[in-house]
Image 1 (cartoon, rainbow, N blue to C red):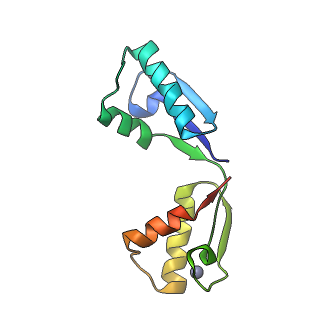
Image 2 (cartoon, helix red, strand yellow):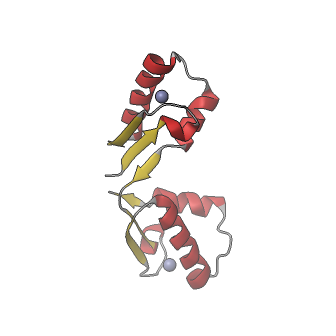
Image 3 (cartoon, protein in one colour):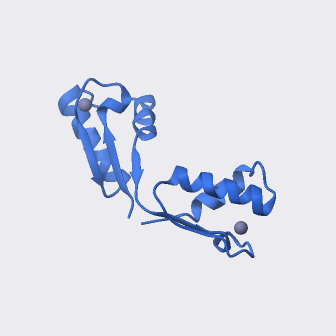
Length: 119
Ligand SMILES: [Zn+2]
Ligand SMILES: [Zn+2]
């Protein structure tokens, strides 16, 4: 399973609060909500703050992808990349070098993301 981490410092707060390795994004967001209320006096965080928090959540785990999972007749697989960004870069490289796709369209990217396995 992927683990989710967040630190208040990452959104520019002068606050040492950190959550490390929550087991789901939902759990992490609930914990951040409690902290926002108790330590920052924010009862209903505005959407732009929630978006900022979400953008700064760090996911860690093992990410894997196989071309076969999106219906390609191709044995390419990546196993246990350290994060989703790294995996997406490697898939982009493979798409370019093996499939001649330089700028994958959004629907293909979405399909790839939906087929990434996280542990
Ligand atoms: Zn804080
Ligand atoms: Zn492939």
